[in-house]
Image (cartoon, rainbow, N blue to C red; front, side, top):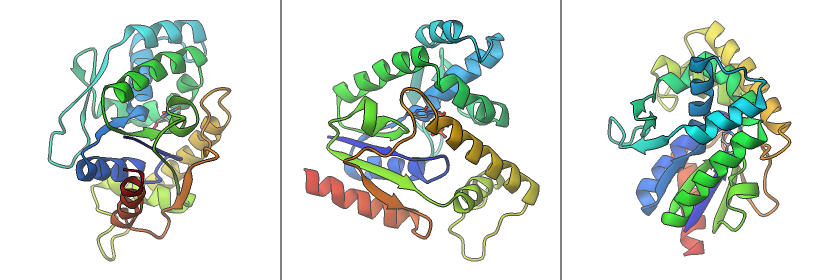
Length: 231
Ligand code: C5P
């Protein structure tokens, strides 16, 4: 069983894919974390984000692995060459460079090969940008999850502030942070949509879901019923 969830930054893919994985017994694959690892390695080693050749070599040389989440239901631990980079890959600096790095075809080639290997090894729910179009074109269930930009920025900001966006009355506290995140996700989406290969795009045969006014649980239920239908 291969389930793919593609969509723009902050649409809720990770929350939904993790919950779905637990519920349906599927291995969760966060492909964005893989591109973030290559970006972090490039920044740390001083590799020029416009040097496609060096980035491709770097992507082929690093080892990316996932370990158990630090807390139940949380994000899996991300290991770059054996080092825990779970937090280090989520900085503003990585956010603003990841789209350029992931736009390099040789970087994508290296990541896609690893992603397909995970899919070949067992049942998977994979989230990203090109899961349904490039990596797993024959997936059993394809979902394209979107939400309007303001809702996505609000969720991301509250996540960073440690607030659960589902709490009644919960609101963004730091407006400057909200605005920065809003600008960042719009810029990242535009960059991701412009990639020559593996661009952010809804597969022709994907089910489109708009999570703007849905709770995460409602989205999980909707995707789970697609999975049940495909079993
Ligand atoms: O999903 P997340 O926001 O962590 O992804 C970070 C970035 O990694 C995206 O903005 C995109 O540039 C890149 N990415 C990609 N293809 C994927 C997953 C992520 O290009 N399948």
